Structure formats: C-alpha cells, structure tokens
Image 1: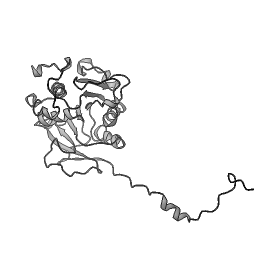
Image 2 (image 1 turned 60 degrees about the vertical axis):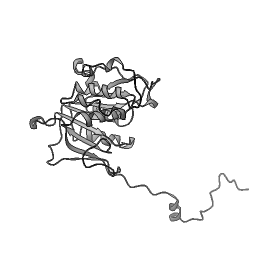
Image 3 (image 1 turned 180 degrees about the vertical axis):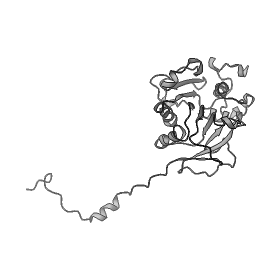
Image 4 (image 1 turned 90 degrees about the vertical axis):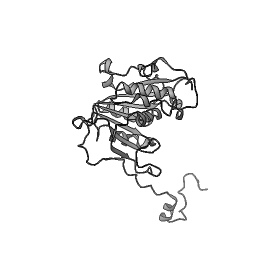
Length: 269
C-alpha cells in the first residue's frame, strides 16, 4: 500500500502559467516624497539655526493664528495624497505640509524655519519624510517637534480635564546649557512615542543635531493651546500673543478646565 505522506504528489491539473493567475501581482512602488521650493529657489541645503515642526492641532493653530509674517518657501509633496479640497492660500483646513521662513532679513532669511504638518503620514513613509525635513535639504542646528500624547501609548491614566506636557531629547540637546533647553519634565518611562514625531527625533539623534520632542495632552484643549503659545513665545520672534486665544472653542467645548503650574506665564497675566 502506498504511503500518502512520502509518495510524490500527483501532477497538477494546471499548467504552470495558469497557477500564476492565482498569485496577486505586486503593486508598483510608490514615488518618493519630495519638497517643492518657491521661486526663486533658495540655495540648498538650508541651514537654519532653529527648525520647528508642528504636528499637533494646538501648535498648528498657533502657527496659523499668531505668525502672520511668515513666508512660504516650500511644500512637501507625498504623491499618494490628493490635493483636492485644498485652498489656494495656505489654510488650517488644508491637507498639506508647508515650510515657512520667519525672518524678513535677507541676510538671515533662514534663521528660523517652521514646518506645518497638516496631512497624515503613514508609518511606512515616516522615515522618508523625516529625511527630507532633517539632514537633506534642511540641515538645522536645533529642532523642536510639537506633537500630542496618544492615550493608547501612555503608561498610566490620562485625565481629560488635566493638561500635561513632557519632552524627549537627543544626546546633543542634553549636553547643551540648561538655560537654552526647555524646562519640562521628561516623558514617563514605559510610555511610547511612535509615528512621524519619533522618526524625526531619531533623525536628529542620528545626525547629532540638538532635538527636542514636546508632547502635550489633551489633544484638543484651550489650556494646551495657551501652553504652546507661551512655549513658542519664548523661542520664536514675532509671535502675536494677542491672537493665541482666538477660536479656542474649536479645540474644546468644555469650560473651567484645570490649569497646571507650567501653564502660568506672564504672557497671559
């Protein structure tokens, strides 16, 4: 009697080319993201003394409401993301990633650059995007990344009525003078940062660039908008603090929220 476990299988009733019909063909690779700079194109790489990258909703609100003098110098394009629905002039509602300069002085036009990330960046594309923003076309001396805490990645309980902010730093930032660093507690051990913000901070570490990632909670809250406004006021010239409080109802329908000690600032007294 034949052993069905050791005997060779019978010949297939299909030809080899027919078997390939059941195998899905690989999808063509996506084109790489790229930055389109304004005309006339600046001399590359840009070497700002400070690069601020806004990913969180409060920081994006501050960028659009409180920095009217910023100049658009470039746009990061992710080919698979459509432009439909975007306005002609940059808007907070657009799905875009724009690069701005803050200086009006031609001799120092790239001393401070801002990047507003208003589109979703998948984990698979995070490394490519972070390379474009740090270390390739833009080589900053220092980077500050503004993002939100994701409750799923936080070890512990997050109260919806209490604001929280924390930071992560690269090795070169920790070695800098204490007076030039942000006075915030470190992100708790055991909690996780992922996505584009983690990739950007890793890029800073790899390139030996001073980098700080500031994360805040809740994601939509007037107190966090005020905190980000106070933080940027201390490091960004030309911030219009009178506009910080505009349209705060966009971020929360709650009132009487608790304010922590780090929110107290002479900016709002």
